[in-house]
Image 1 (spheres, helix red, strand yellow):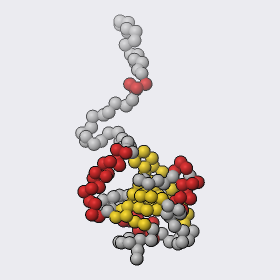
Image 2: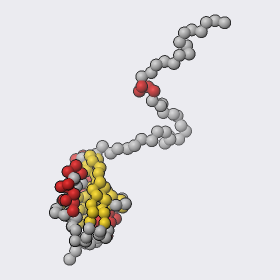
Image 3: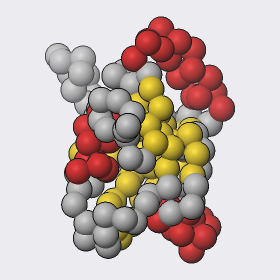
Image 4: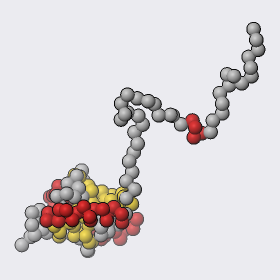
Length: 166
């Protein structure tokens, strides 16, 4: 028997980045590692948690809704519960142009979001999930939004779901 050359069975040392699992070749092109998609145009994602003790407690919000919005667009914040939140939570303030994407457990449609805001009977907790977008995202939304402006309307507290309060 001959001598075994040194190093023939020894594994080569590899840099840590080379030790990553190589993608496997699968029959299904959609199988493989799942990647988490992070939208680079979403600058911030946070929750505003408001306790509304009585029906007289005003949120102090002016919002825009449209059938093609999966969110409520914040136009302005006036005196009320949201302004109080902003004062005591400077890192998660609700600001004009923020998007309310979820109210309590409701999401996906601006009309459902507004209905949840209006119909949640005090005393209650309103949990608003908010996104703040970069200017690029905002410009895209404004461009696309011009295609459906006839269905866009502003909502002030006290308005009904289907028109202004008299």
